Amino acid sequence: MTLNLTDAEMAALEDLAAKKDLNKTVVIRQALRLYQMVDQRLREGKKVFIEDEMTKAKSELMLL
Amino acid sequence: MEKSDIYLQRSGTREDVDAELWDDISDLHLDLWRSTWVPMLDHTVRRLQSAAVPRENWPQDLHWDWGKKTDWSRSLLTLQRFAITCGGALQGLTLVNLTKLTARLPSQRGKDLAYIEFVSTAPWNRPEIAGVQQFHGIGINMVRAAIELSRNEGFHGRIGLHSLIQAASFYSGTCGMSALGPDRHYDDLDYFEMTPTQADAFCRPA
Amino acid sequence: MKINVTKEWFRSRAHLEEGHEIGAGSLRHIGKPALHAVPANATADNITFGQTISLMRRKRRWTIDRLATAAEATSDELAEIEANPECVPEPSTVFSLAKVFKLPPKALMQKAGLADAASSHLREDSIRYAACSEFKEPLSADEEHVLQAVLKAMVEHTEA
Image 1: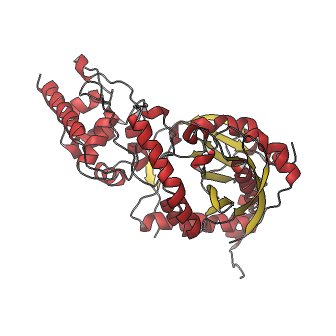
Image 2 (image 1 turned 90 degrees about the vertical axis):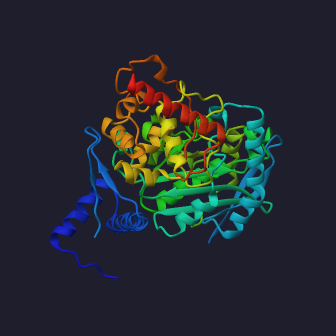
Image 3 (image 1 turned 180 degrees about the vertical axis):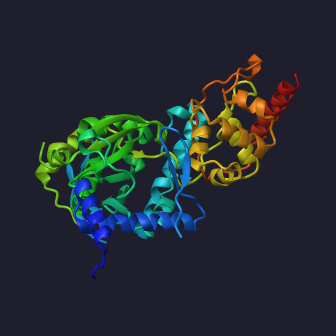
């Protein structure tokens, strides 16, 4: 399978790989795992939130 | 499903015995869990109730339902399962999550790790349940499996877990993991991590 | 996935595990419900805020997730409220819970330790227990009795 990424997407992929000490394939795999997990939770009727540790303010992570 | 040849040790005599590590939890493993672990765990609950032992002194995982955990995990790529058998009996179960947490140790902060969601050994291997211990070695084999999974995934052996209270000394002492203290987001259970260097050391003979 | 374990490695480490427990994992599990969440010696005086919420939820046979939706709170927050007697809940969450359960907000705030208790009979003691998000078994007769006493005390305190 060949991935067609824009320059910005490739830059983001390389940036993540560098920061996380992973190769690009693993970054893509992790992204897929997370996406599947979030999708599953949403299908179960759950919500996925992001919480600010300091203020405890919550915002909902939406997947369309 | 792949099988790896491992060893367990008979407690007391320290006789090495051949065992198997499976890289999944099969329906057969679940049948064994239901038919051999659950009755013993239920009996333990009744015994603790009859003796009016305060709840906070109970083993904390008596009600874990490995059937539900396995069902839940099978549809998700991020979750990997392991089982250990010996002599046809189920000796241990583990669930590992590849995206749950990133490392918290300052030297590893933000890097991916294999997080051990749950690990259990059979009730006859638990002194606090059975009074005696039939086999030991399930813990080090499961930690080794998590490290190898972490390496395979490109995480260089990094692992993390929240230890039940009674197991904290095993992870800090026997496994050489770094203790990061109680985690208020996880019932104040102690959180432990292993760096790549610690993982390499663990995988060498002591 | 296969692993290669040498006998030498195993023998050098196995004896260190002898006698140890090895369990790891969050207590907020998916699984069989915990046994009764409120200890046998609970009374209206010593029952905690979290236990009160647990009883109110279970009276309705709701899961934590369902209560979270009704109270516009997160399941994690409510699970911590129920399981951790030292948890200090958000005032907005306590108000939402009071609205959901049709309880006097001021009395519930005092029960939660968020307002000065006008009366010492709403004190909190730490009694730990395990809660499960799937736990929605009906209340026992003892639990029902304790819950009614707590509700009565809240209403009486508000009217005083």
